[in-house]
Length: 303
Image (cartoon, rainbow, N blue to C red; front, side, top):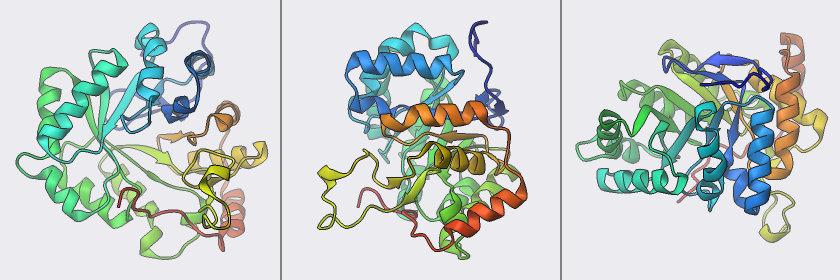
C-alpha cells in the first residue's frame, strides 16, 4: 500500500502470508451506514489521517459500500480493502461479489471473505463443488480478488475446523475480548483459533474486542432505545476503549476492528495511535475483572 508522506505511521503487522502489513486497527466500515454521505466522507478521511490502511465492509452493512465508495476510489492505493459475502453457493457468491465491486466502484477487492460462518452444514456447503469458495477462487484467477478469508462469530471449534479444511485460506476474523477469554470452557476458547491460525500463518482480525456483553432483553430496553448501533452492548468510555484495545492487540493477532457505531470510531483510533502493548500482569487484571460478565458470543446472527 502507498503511504503518503504526510500520513502518520501507525504500527503495522504482517497479515499472514498475503504480503500486506495491516495497521494494528482495521476500519470496520459498517460505521458509515449510520452517516450521511458528507459525514461518511469526513470519517474516511479521519481514518486515513490516523494512518489506518486496512478497511473492511460487506453488502449486508446497509449503504456502507456506497458511502465508502467515493473516498475509497480517491485513495484506493492507500487502502487494503476487505469485503465479504454471506452467500454459500457459487451463484450467490459470484453475484454478491460483482454487486460489491459495482457499489464500491473498484476493479479489485484485496481480501474477499466468507461472512459469518455459523454451522458445519454451511462449512460443508462452501467447500463442496458449486460452493461459494469455487466462486472465490475463480474470481481470484480472474484478478477480481487477491486473497481469501473467513469470518465467524460462531463456535471456536468450527473456525478451527474451517482453517483445517480450507487449504488456501489466508485470513480469519473472529471474536476476542476479556469476557470470552475469562471463560474456561471450549465454547469460548477463541485462543485456540489464534493458536491454530498462527500455526498456519494466517492473518488474524479481531472483532467484538469492545463488547461489554449482550443488550438487556427488549422488554427491558427496546431495540430502538439502544444508545449504540451495535448488536452487543459496547464499552464506551475512552479509558475502557483504550484498555480493551490494548488487551486485544496484545494477543498475538494482526489487527483489531472497531465497533460498528460511528460514535465510537474516534476513540478506537486514539487507542490505536497510543498503543504500546499491555504487560501480562495488566492482562491478568483485565481478565479477572471480566470473569463474571456475560458474553454475546458465540452467536448465530442469522438464524
